[in-house]
Length: 216
Image 1 (cartoon, helix red, strand yellow):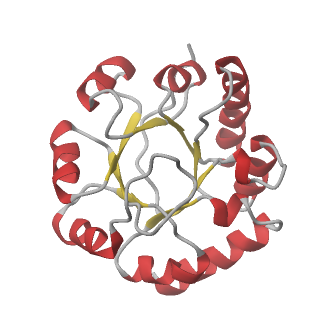
Image 2: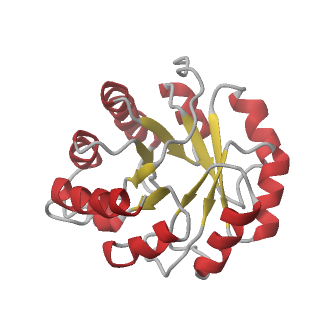
């Protein structure tokens, strides 16, 4: 088991997620290379259909790549993978193991992020000791099969005004609505298909970063 790096905090900026089915035939490794060389500070590995051994080998490569780039490496759902490759953190949903049990299993050094879709879930995540929360889906999204209905910007505004925990805004965020999300107070913003589904990933990231820098 790889020992994780010293626990880090969630940085501001773009939060990229892998999604090979939306990557125009490119591998997670190829796409991640373009994302990381473009200066994105957070990469989450999200994979639902591959064999565990294949995911492990991918995550070993991505762990090395993120370390070289100085980026945070988060693994979605798979606690064992996160521990096995020394990821910086793990991200869980409302239907996964309870946060207290996840913390017991992964120890104090891994970041734990929790997806939330309502103020009640956000407050519960804070109470349970989450390091950061996902706030969304803000808009309609097709990257997850079992996704809940969009929560809109009202929930984002609630989190900004009422909670101190670091958070990432997520769900259906594209270049055309990114400014709305930034103006609502989000500093860390997740995009999936807008990045991985673009033929020119560095060019798209540069456009997104320009919007964020202009408004913050």
